[in-house]
Image 1 (tube, rainbow, N blue to C red):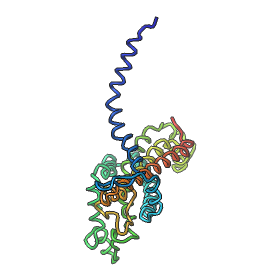
Image 2: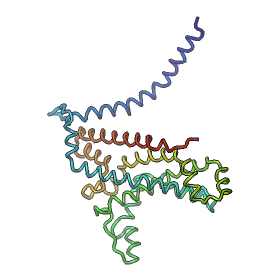
Image 3: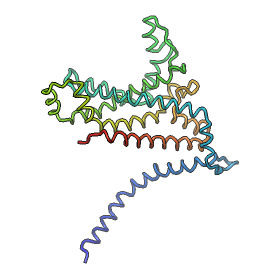
Image 4: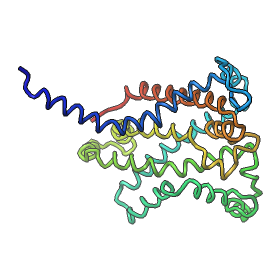
Length: 296
């Protein structure tokens, strides 16, 4: 004879009832849009006069022949390869610095973290003032020393670098918080033992601190990589993807295709490729870095 059977069933039903609202929202706003986007990538853009038609992989063939896509893809690859490691390096340096006993430490921490809490549109407008020709801060400083600065946002050679500098400035302070929390959780006995052994600070960081920070580094790297593929707000204010798509990134190009060119089918194709790329990069990072992580 089973004892407590009705109670166990009632608890299961109660648990599923609690889970249902969250599961519904997850399916409605995450899983269904992903499946719908994948399905739409195999159809043409439908109109009132010309309904959408199933065209198999024609959108993907068009994408591989699209020169703008490859240019935007190259921009995003350059942007990610620079912003991700640079933001992490600055975050570690700032975390180590503010973790020391220095005067006005709280003020320094707040100064490093302030760019993170500023709205993206406000940040873009601040840096737009920096980059504005003739009246911008950079032009004013360089002019004092007799240098003639280029049109930072109007030159195809400098515009992507300007966006990269802005992104690093905004993201490094956010990642610093995670590294600071990780540093404060490290046992102080390790540093004391290293000092007794005569280990230099660089040797201690390289052989002890950084390996113990690898779980945090993996977390930060995944988030930084995702951020590098979802930048769109700054481009609206600064460049709108120009000049000649020199600063356009994948997500901004997807927005243009969907809402400016009104081709949601091709935008869905680009979105599927972007999601697949992010998934592959995330799996690769977990596969490669997981062997180097020291969990405590």
